[in-house]
Image (tube, rainbow, N blue to C red; front, side, top):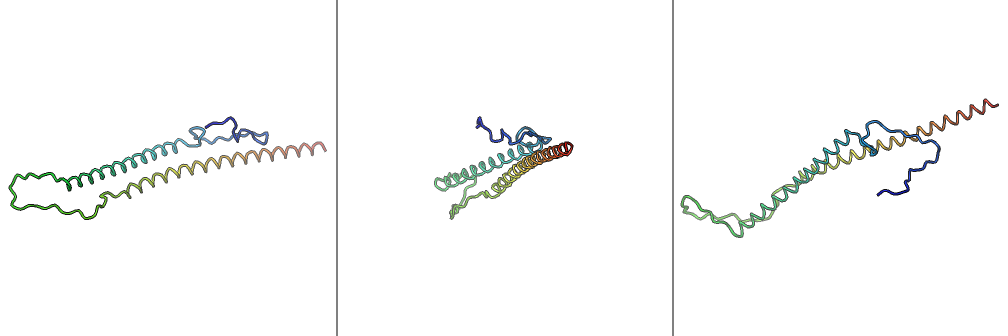
Length: 155
């Protein structure tokens, strides 16, 4: 949400030095390479989350089908006449058949990489701010030096 008053709209000094680093994609501080990498990681993250959702969905469907088969088994028609009746094995404990730790690790790894990109961007923006303050201080120092020279010339 944009407001009429911005905190950094006014400066305390007369120097308004703007230092813009090269390679920006806009005012957000992302370089083109970082933005491409972010988009790629975001795409991979969405794909991994979708794969996890699909794995959970298929596992749930398999479990439902297993329960349906236990409750209402479909008759198996054999081509060869069987002399003995085959019994189905009993189900002891319902253990989920899929292991979600692989999906969770992949998703956590991609989220960590995205956070690293955000941290790198924030560090670069802090560096730019420090360089701007340094340039302002240097300009002030030079102005004071000029003032001192002017005073010495008057004397």
